Amino acid sequence: MISLPQSLRRIIKELAELPSIGPRQATRIAFHLVSKGSQRIAGLSSSLKELSNIKTCKACYFIFDSAGDLCEICANPQRDQTLIMVVEKETDLISLENTNKYKGRYFILGEMPKTGLLEDWQKERLASLKKSILNLPGKVAKEIILALNPTSIGDFHASILIRELADLTPKLSRLGRGLPSGGEIEFADDETLGSALQSRG
Ligand SMILES: [Zn+2]
Image 1 (cartoon, protein in one colour):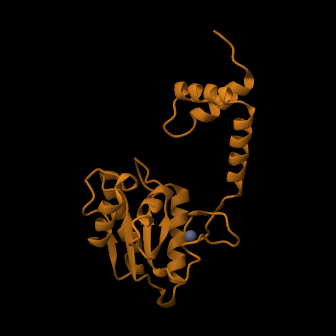
Image 2 (cartoon, helix red, strand yellow):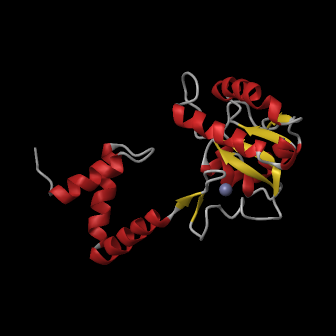
Image 3 (cartoon, helix red, strand yellow):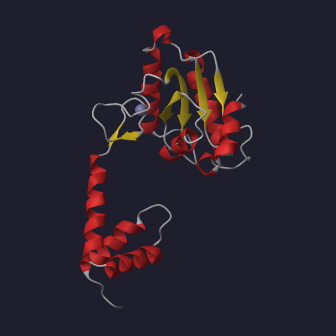
């Protein structure tokens, strides 16, 4: 078996740990990078290094790189802080935000586990969401929207979250109507998501 340089083996191993990339693809990408020469590699490595400046919002767990503790959505006084949409992933937030139809804030709970209940870190996040709602004037959120994928896993976790959050809002809605059953929020187009938002119930 041919032995590859250690630096190349290391990057193949790192790449293969990324989502949707297997060892074969990782090897192809690594060779592609090498073929691009030292300037491109330097550019890529400095971009990667800058990623470490990204912070996580202490209110919603979305990312940001400005000063302070809050992302631009949570820090925006025009956004309704009492209207909260619970999403699984950052990419779901981005898809929903791109519809331009939502003026509340978000809360990222992390991807729903395929089997069983929420992970411990997710339970901690849920506890921090509850605490932040209790800190609102009136101690309730005007509405909490569960934007979980319309899959059986999403349905299972939605029923748990409804129980957990029922006392903290007079209106608990689920985003899903209008979304193809079994589909994913992240991959829905703006129009489908926008109408799912408007017809939530
Ligand atoms: Zn935030």
